Amino acid sequence: MDEVSLRRSLGLRNLVFFGLVAMTPVAGFTVYGFVNQYSNGAVVPAYLLGGFGMALTASSFATMARLAPGAGSVYGFAHLAMGRFAGFMGGWSLLLDYGLITGLASLFGAIYLVGALPGVPVEPVLGLMCAASLAVNYVGLGLSSKVDLVSVCVQLACALVFCVLTLWVLAGSGSGLTLRPIWPTDGRFASVVSGSSVSIIAYLGYDGVSSLAEEVKGDDPGRAVGRAILICVAVMAAVFVCISWLLSDLSVDMTIQDPANAAFEIVQARLPVLAIPLALIAGMAIGFSGNFVGHAASSRIVFALARDGLLPPVLSRVHRRFRSPFFAVILTFVFFTTVAFVALPHVDVLGGMVSFGALIGYILVNLSVLVHLGMVNWTGNRLHHRILPDLGILVLLYILSGINTLAIELGLAWMAGGVVIYLMAPVWRKRQPA
Image (tube, rainbow, N blue to C red; front, side):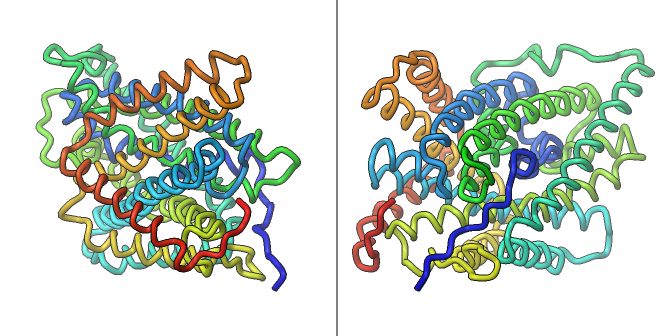
C-alpha cells in the first residue's frame, strides 16, 4: 500500500492563530480565580513566573523544531537527543496534558455557555462540543485554521473591551490601578510559586504548534514553527498579566464565592453589561475552537508514536481523502470525551495533572537541547544551548514543586503506565525508521 502523508497547508499565520487559540486568550478570565487563590492575591508575579518558564522553554522548542520538524513534537525532540525511550516518555507525558485539557476545555465551555443561556442542559452542549472537535479533526486542519482566525480576533477584541471599560470604571471610582496585584501586603514567594503552577494551565497549548510541523508549507517548516511559538508566548503573557491585574483591582472588597467563576462574578458585579457577552465568547472559544487544537495536538502525538512502532500500527493510518490521522483522532476523541463527562467533581486535581504532564514534557525539551547541542554535538553557543536550557529546567522544576500532591502522585502513576506500554510495544510494533 502506498504511504499517504499529511497535507502541507499551514503557514506562519495559521501556526500563530493555532497557538493563540490553543492558549485561548480568554483563559485569563477562566483560571483567574484559581491563580488568585493559590498565589494569595499575587496574580501578576504568578503569571510572570509562569511566563518566564514558558519563554525559556519556547526558545528550546524553537531550536529543536528546526532539527526535528516532525508531527510528534516533544516525542520527536527527546527521541533525537536521548533515544527512543526518552522520546516515548516525553510524548506520553504530553498525552496526559492534551487528553485532560481537551476534556476540561469541552466541559468548561459547556458550563459557560449554559451559564449564559439558563435552562439549557449541560450534557447535550458538552456532547455537541466533543462531536464538533471530532468532525473538524477528522476532516483535517484546513477548516480549523479558518475557525482559528475568527476565534482569536473575537477573543482579543473581548479582552480589549474589558480592559478599556475596567480602566474607565477604576478612573471613575478614583482608585485607578494599584500595586496590590503585584505584591499584596501578606504575599509570600511560596504562594507565587503555587499560583504559577496553576497559571501554567493558561499558557498550555503553544507547544501544540510544534506537533503540526509535517503540515507546514515551505522548505523550512521548523523555522516557521519556532517563530510562531515565540510570538504566541509573548502575546499571551501580556494578555494574561493585563487581565489578571485589572480583575484584581476591580474586585476590591468583593467576596468570591467560586474560584472557577471568579472572573464572571467580578464582571457581573462591576461590569454587568459585559457579563453575558463574555460568558458566551468564553464558552464558544474554549468549548469549540479551544478543544479543537488540543485534540489535534494529542492525535498527532499518537500518530507519531504509532508510526515509529511504539503504539499499535493502525493508529498511524492516514485518511486517503482528508489526509488526517483518523484512527488517532478517533482514539483521542474517546479519551477526552470520557474525561469531559466524568471530570466535574475533580477539576482541581485534573488541572494539576494537566500541569504535571506539560511540565515533564517541557523539561524534556530543555534537556534535549542541553544534551544534543550543548553536549553531544557542541555548537559553541553557550547562551542558547546551555545556559537557557539549564535555567528553563530549574524554573520548571520549581514550578512543578507547587502542584497539588495528589495530582503529582496520579501523574507519576500515568508515567509508570507509560513504562509498561513501552515494554509491551514489541508485541505489536513493526519497527520503522524514525
